[in-house]
Length: 231
Ligand code: MN
Image (cartoon, rainbow, N blue to C red; front, side, top):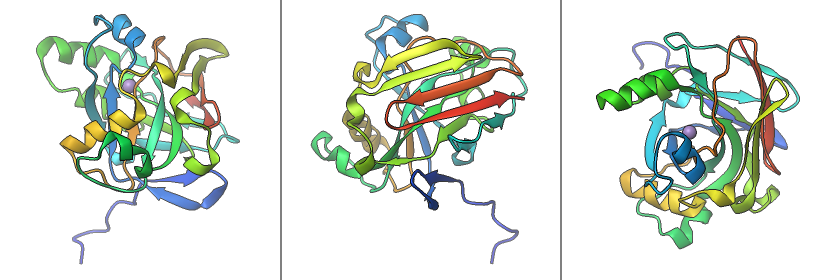
């Protein structure tokens, strides 16, 4: 028996089959996976991507037909958006070969890696961890998951993000430094991937601050769209 009732399993509905729920195991994220975003963050544009993580219950699954609400987090005065393709893992493994990586994918989603940019900047300066900057509650709004057999080739998908109908981010997954398959292979060298893992693959350029009351619309062609208001 449990000492108390365990918290509910985090889930993301599957598009086209909303009764089917994808149970979230872990959320991995890739940092600096687009050269132009690396440049805007003060890098050389030729840096090596890095990994960080968010707790599984940071997901906020959003039905594309119903605008949602996300709480503006405390402890920041510079919350920023990062629109990203998200890989949903359906088959686990360790030391996965790049050539086999795609067979581990269940589907795709579009997500927004919400970031307390002020805390991230301070953490970088003080050589401290990013957890408070990246891994907070509701920091991972995400669309329903589009199964691979119902989605286009994910290696060349448009990503976009609008704030109050103004375009902020526009990119394409073909500009990733580490490809989808390389991201899966590389992560599986550090951790055993499990079914239910989500991987945020990094943001194109154009990240900027968002404030209470702002309406964020984000999408990935052929995968999904989401809309949420910051409360
Ligand atoms: Mn990111």
